[in-house]
Length: 108
Image (tube, rainbow, N blue to C red):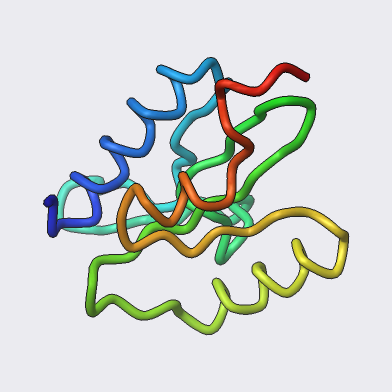
């Protein structure tokens, strides 16, 4: 079982693509320029790590390791998503995603 967030993200992305979801990782981190680490001022703070479109729905997936915690901005973004009637998944492993998404075997 993967323990690093980046490994969990990759496992989730592979699963999503295998079931036919249109999914990708969002670039929420800044970039390193020389010694400086610069954040993009236009990035939505707290935005989820992965966005997936599957069976006519959108899913926002925040990936955390077993002991990882959401930042304040991530909690605000989760509330924003849920208040809009959309699905936000806090995933510590792939099973957290599988539990929420519709069964890929079922027809639309």
